[in-house]
Structure formats: C-alpha cells, structure tokens
Length: 283
Ligand code: NAP
Image (cartoon, rainbow, N blue to C red; front, side, top):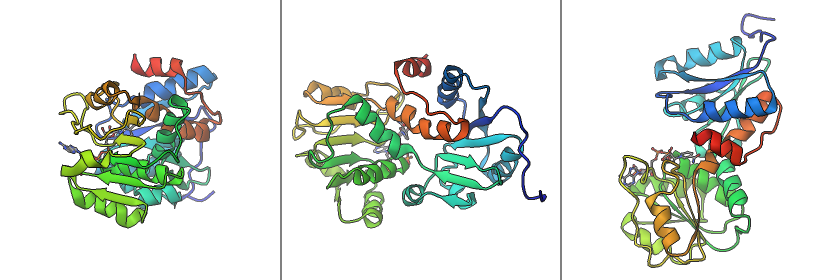
C-alpha cells in the first residue's frame, strides 16, 4: 500500500452527508431508519463542510472508514471536479448528490435525483405514462436539470420549460437538445396547455417563501402534477392543481427514492421506500 492509498479500517461502515448548512437535512433520519430496519451496524452522519475545506474533507473521509457520502448545497457542482469518475447523467446534469469511496481510494460521483423523481411518480401514480403527452417543467436550477434529464431518458417526447431567468432554460435547451421547448416566464400558463405531466422544480412554495401561482386555465384535469418542494407536503401549487381535479404527487417520495441507490452501494442492501420510512422522516 502506498501513502496515496487510504487503508480502510475494518469496522462498521460510515456514510453521511456533506453540505453547509446541514442541520436541516432529513437524510440522517432517512438512512438511520434504513440502517435500523436492515439490522446494519453502520452510521450515517451529517457533516458541515465549508467550501474551502471540501478537497481536504474528501481526502480524509475514506481514510476514516467512510464508504461514501451524499452531497448537498453548496458542493453538488464542485465535487464533479474532485471525483475520479463521474456517471454520464451526473456530467449531463452538472452536479452530483452521491459519492462512492472505492476501496482503492478513488471517488465515484453520481446523481440520483432524476432516478428519485421518476421512481416517486411510478410508486405514487402507477398508471402515469411517459407517452401520454408533453411534460412541463417550471424552473431551471440544478433540480430541474435532473428532472429534465430523467423525463427525456424515460421517453417523454417533448419537455417544455420555463424559468424566471430565461437564459437558464435556454441553456438547458442548448445542452439537452431538440425535444426541449422554452417558454417565457410571462407565458408559463400557456405551457400547461396539453401537458400531461407538470412539475414545479423551483423553490417557490417552500415554507417561508412565496407560493408558485400560475394561471391554471389551460391545465387539463387529466394531468399529473408534482412538486419538488416537500415542506409543506401539500404546496399551494399542488392544492390549486388538485382543486382543478388533477392527480398530485408530493416531493417527499423523490427525496426518499433518490437516497436508495447510495444506501445500496454503501451498505450492500437495497432499502424499501414505504410508509414507515415516510413517517420516520416526517417525525
Ligand atoms: P436552485 O438551483 O437554487 O434553483 C432554484 C430555482 O427556483 C430556479 O429555477 C429559480 O429561478 C427558481 N426561483 C427561486 N426563487 C424564485 C422566485 N422568487 N420566483 C421565480 N422563480 C424562483 O435550486 P434546486 O437545487 O434546483 O432546488 C429547487 C427546489 O427543489 C428546492 O426547493 C429544493 O429543496 C427542491 N429539491 C427537492 C428535491 C427532492 O428530493 N424532493 C431534490 C432536489 C431539490 P431563477 O433561475 O430565476 O433564480
């Protein structure tokens, strides 16, 4: 073994989440529930890491017995440049939320947000069809990029996108291609006409923030409407859509499902996303 290769102590596996701030993260409760349910003697630890300490932290964690970490704001983009390998989807999205520390010390970066988004819809709206019609995505931040990638990957033929800052949705179109159609923010209501799937991928509607209010006249009651915001579970946008007769799916399931691939890679067991987990995370 050379000095560059971390020796992994043979003790209980450690994983965690790095970000700043980190105190609000629900991931420790989520993974803690799975560890307990699966009877695995591991630990999942929230770790506040300042941007200037990111490189140092990623060097140290594998040496301390960590098998990987989740990554949240503000490190999701920066970790791509520090990882030794990056999945195609993380590269396309431009951000990673899951790191795997390999026994040889190499860091593998992935983005599971898009997987979590689709798995949530499949679990909570089992008859949802990707070929039912265009999808409309509101927002063009990091989470929207993951949603757009997963919708295209799942076979949705047309993905419409709108964002307050138009240049960001133009950028997504430039990177993701011809199946994207950009709408002006002032015309967001028009984007809903004929949409079979509608997604709020902005942070509007979060507790303490103003709600997302769009003219919903063009929204079909047959559309499936979902929100990435999960505090509160029933956002004003979802409540408005439900009042029009739409099926709605809240954003908590995305959070739960995006965590499963990391848990499986780190701890060797595919965990269940079920009502018990939802309750544990909401406690
Ligand atoms: P982000 O990169 O900071 O993007 C924020 C988005 O919200 C941008 O499109 C931004 O538009 C828009 N926005 C913010 N304030 C606005 C306002 N006052 N009016 C109009 N648009 C506004 O954040 P993100 O990482 O994409 O996350 C977006 C949301 O998804 C957050 O609430 C996050 O918690 C949630 N999320 C949930 C999950 C889950 O598992 N359920 C996973 C990831 C993220 P501009 O570009 O114009 O600023």
